[in-house]
Length: 309
Ligand code: NVA
Image (tube, rainbow, N blue to C red):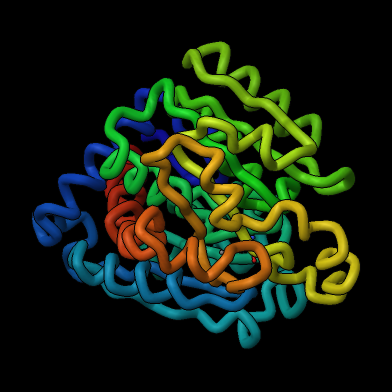
């Protein structure tokens, strides 16, 4: 048995990512066709940061897989405060079949995975949001067809979880990933190097720009995210001051391919990182992305449980 986790986007090989997206599409068409959590077996969902889509889509998805979604209140559990991550991992694994955790530090998630003995899923950390990317790639596939060769432009805070995850998951899919961000908000060299390494295998590419216009020119997919990620609220003023030129407006979107789609993982701040006329306009696919969280995460859980058996 090989215990599998989903901690960052590149935990999936290109072939596995394709299989997982196929499974997500299958589960979208036939929501009750797979019952890997029959029993019901329980899945612990822990949130140390705010949530709407993630809690609801995991909760509904776990139930559709035959399981019992168990919300573990992060503040009550006090993971890493009241008891160590290692001890929490050992205790959870005696009760549940899978752990879904949204927290701050990727290292804590790695520790949980190292000690849990059951699959652990990253439901967002400061560094990565891989479940969102499975949903986003499923959405791109639905609207644009095959992923290899497509160009995606991510504009805004490219040093955040969503920028990092697009670089890793997009290149895994064989896409050309362009990010545009101001100085100080570009991805780390480690993420860019890893994306370039994946791209060499898949035929994709990873490129960093300072100008949003250059990244968006001719792109098939244009993505943005909040300028103030959860946990960065104290930096609001300095962030609002530098990101203005990266707003996804209809003028910026007009530089992309005429049939480009606009994406945002939500929550969105209209008039800040995305114009109301874009998110509420005909090229927006954000509600499909939100729905696809459930189908994508069901595929992730099914894949991990089957691989770890
Ligand atoms: N970058 C955002 C994503 C929200 C789903 C955040 O971390 O708050």
